[in-house]
Length: 414
Figure 1 (cartoon, helix red, strand yellow):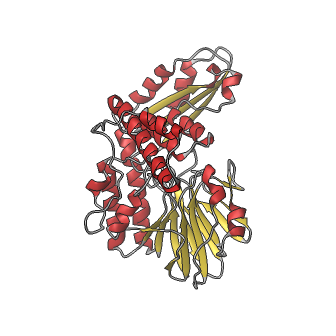
Figure 2 (figure 1 turned 90 degrees about the vertical axis):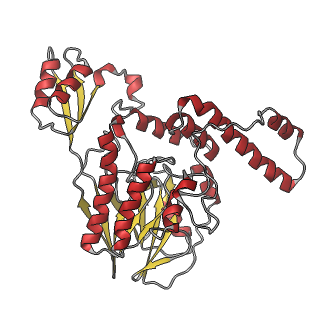
Figure 3 (figure 1 turned 90 degrees about the horizontal axis):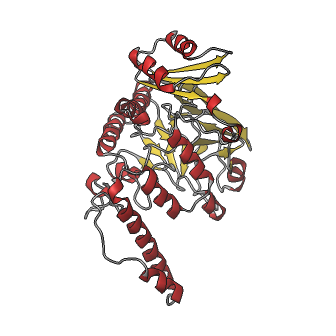
């Protein structure tokens, strides 16, 4: 029998609402999962991607995660993981750093056997690259097998990647797919295998109302999946449907019925009634001890705008989802991340984008050299890029991430 904790979407480093306490909450939730695993003497912790919220975590987030993984290692419990879409870098991954320190195993197409179960990994793959996948995994001789991967899978809602296709075309017969990316937990049986999401460990969006937690997966004669909740920061959701002539006092009255101390307060207003100034409600909640207060008045959104399903309580999430739906290339995602979501100073964004484009052109030139001389168009495109190297002072070193002994170090990843 093999019993593992299946977690994911920990998003360490996410300073939600630009509040430092919320950044701490995401690391604390991950630490709680690890300590539960130690207390339960789990056979492994299996992480299904998005350990970090983005590909350029701060040093404090890297070291905080390091300390959590050290606790797990000292207890003799392996940490098996894959790379999600939020944290993916062009070359060396943060997971590689922890693996080089003996604190993690990056799952791939070779089996990692824990107890009597073989675990495999498939990092997040953009839609534009999935047609090239062959799902060829090395054989194993364990009693059970599980694939850990990251993406939005059918038959779950919003799925754009067919789990049945993977299970059917895979060279290995999987008993379970342990998934990350969808922050809502769920499980379904597909092609005689259990396909399950563990959900996120903290609320990364105002739409995530259900309690957070993780899965406990047991591989024996059959696969059993149970769920355990986490003690995370309180979110208070207040839905107010205003009647005629009702207004801000009615909203404040409803908000005041709750214990708001240190809570994130999300107020949603609908119905009729008088106009309500969100700031007046937010101030009311903050004065009563709320950590964060956000108000969305749905009456102010036209029918055409409502079709976009944007919640202004979390605009960053709305933009991220829209960018993801566009199916952009990896290069385009890199540039979007630099402009919109990275920690590059605004004054240095232009230089950093130029560096990205120069690298891409260099890669194309190397590929062209292998196939023959460059075309006139390639030569002209290269000539149009200023070849003077610019040190922005804020770019992340994304070289191979190893020192002279082949061991990764924090300094070389930063």
